[in-house]
Structures are given as structure tokens and as C-alpha cells.
Length: 156
Image 1: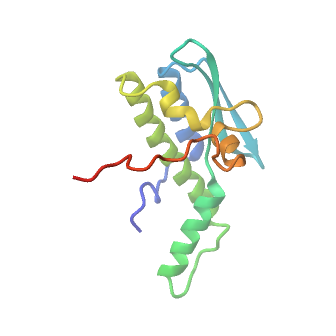
Image 2 (image 1 turned 180 degrees about the vertical axis):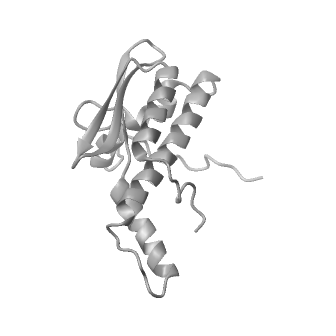
């Protein structure tokens, strides 16, 4: 399997604390966690954007989707599976959060190096307390975006 961190042995809670450290270093002014069934499913943090406005950002980790992927890959590579899908849930949590940690670390580096602004990096995850901006656009079938104009990309 060619997937980053799919064998991570670092506990999800440890990885989440590393993510919080990166966010604090990037200027987060508050951090909380969304918990379902005793597991962290999202990190929500407050940060100032480039205009000085406070923004809430919600970074979800879809552990169940990771579990589905790991399970399907496992079944495809084992004639006689010895593990169960439920046993893969903990590994899926470790993998999902470790990938999120890598992504956040890169995004924070981009912000600190002024390669991107906070809003450029986190815009899809800006949260109004109900839904993220991505979820809002998804509900509108992405109609807030203009249709591409013809000949935008010209070939040489």
C-alpha cells in the first residue's frame, strides 16, 4: 500500500496535541475539540485573519472513511483475513490524525513564510458554528463560483 502514515503507531491523542502546538505557534487564540463516541472527530480553533478578524476553523478527521479504505486494501491483499474491520478503527484514527498533522504543519509553514495567508490555507474549513465554508458551497452545488471562461488556459 502506498499511503502515507498508514502504519503509524502514534496514538491519535498524541498527534492531536502536536497539531495544537502547531496551531498555537501559528497564532491560534483558542482551541477546542469536537468529540463523538469518546473520540475526537475535529479540532476547532480561533485565529486572526490578515485583516485582524477572528475566524473559527474546523479541521475534521474522517476516521470512518480511513477505516473503510484500510479495510478494503486489507481484504484485497489477504486471501484469508485474520483481522476484523472493527480492529482497524484504532489504526484508522492514528492514520487520519497523523496525516492531518503533516498537512497542518505544512500549512502553518506556508503561513509563517508568507507564501500563503491564513484565509488561503484554511478557507474551506472556516466554520460559522453550523457548517464549514466548503459544506456551505457544497450545499449550493458550488454555484457561488463563476463558470470558467473559454480559453482561460492557452496551449502553446
